[in-house]
Amino acid sequence: MKTNGLIKGAMALALAGFVLATPAVAEEPHVAPIKELVTSKLKPALNDPKIIAAIKAQNEANQNLGQSDVDALDTEWRSEVEAGGGEMMDKSLNSPASGYLKTVRDGAGGLITEVFVMDAHGLNVAQSDPTSDYWQGDEAKWQKTYGSGADTVFVDEIEQDESTQMLQSQASFTIVDPDTGKPIGAATVGINLDMLDL
Image 1 (spheres, rainbow, N blue to C red):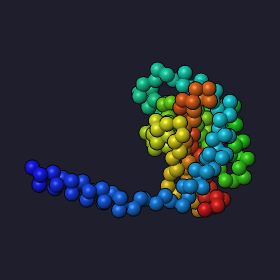
Image 2: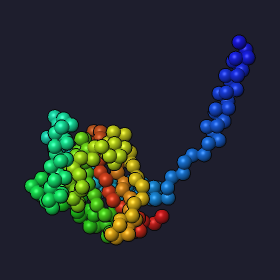
Image 3: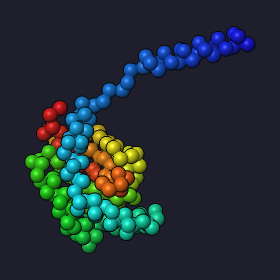
Image 4: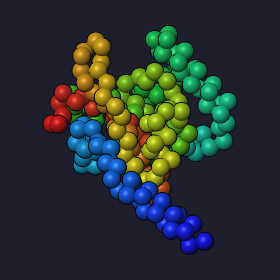
């Protein structure tokens, strides 16, 4: 019995030593400056009353949507993207909230490539530029923010735009109701890494 206990104790110590000796995975160089940008500029900019009101209104309107409804909306949006526009896209892109997001993008002097906000289902509420799909709920930008708490920031991998050769990454973060502190949606911002001090 004592031998068995000693073996278990030795194994526990060996495992603890392995965990302590295993180096932590280093964060990529673009992550820290983007998180700083989110905290200092992007969160305050997207805490605008127009954005909060638009998300809350869409959450209320969509509270009874099922997955088949979400899929149908996404399919409609994608078909309008392929057609070069349509009623659903026009209504969204011309909303006051989308107009505000365009001013945020334009005011950043090229640092921001796009901005869009999502509701509690991961559906677009407003965007500075047309997105390829309407439902983001099946993607990390929504899954790793809205469902992960009020202070969550997710910085995606670096991608290179084939046409412009620009290096960019997306920062996504939870948007909260300023009155309650509870998550109501999420935002994604495209960042031009060529203009970010790394």
